[in-house]
Image (cartoon, rainbow, N blue to C red; front, side, top):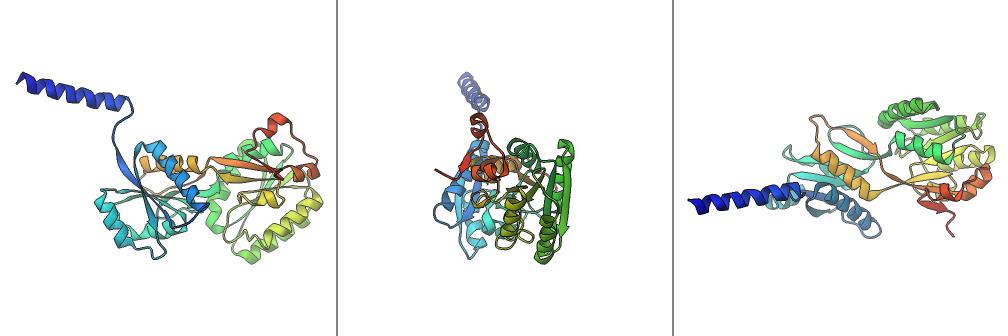
Length: 304
């Protein structure tokens, strides 16, 4: 009897020590991502590493084929006793509705909008946008943003962030690409200067790279107003600065959401980003930075 009590005591002590030392066993998580090659594969692996860091759980990776074979995936998940899912990319987004209610799901690496599932959108958090704007172009007094109805939620968050920062807002919601182009054309024909900034968002309706981007960049160069973008390549093409996702931190944000699921689905903007600044554009705009300020830029363009 004494031996049995001693064994129970030792096992309980080991369990407590494991908990206090951070070794408590967490429920396994599956990260599902498209079947892609490099460099895109590394992006999903970085997100997966962030999920692992945040949860300290066993993380299983599942590749999503083009056929979106849900029966095969659910069979694998059942075999691994996994009910917590992080779905990545467009295939992950399309797969979400196929799962039953038995799973906890968050969506990432996709411009998710509020709907049936929780997730972290690729849209940059407006609070972060305002902070970076203050750092890179402190003379800006008014921010212009054009989005489609699907991103009206970002428009509201942006208006709130600008109000708190004391920056004027010109936010317009359009119904289609035609109206978006007309709105951009009218905007850049106006009296814009260095106190104005246009934020180009990730918006599949309102932000067309082949039509909108050249229009805005040419006007920016001629009138010397600021262009910032949530699309990484735009800084290289002439925007003053653009945002790159911090994929590891995105994984942590997704995992945190998975750990704190709410009854009603919620979609949050991406909080952690990397900053690319085009110094050639800055020079043309009459903006200069100290070496200390440049150290806060993750990517400096043009690349030497």
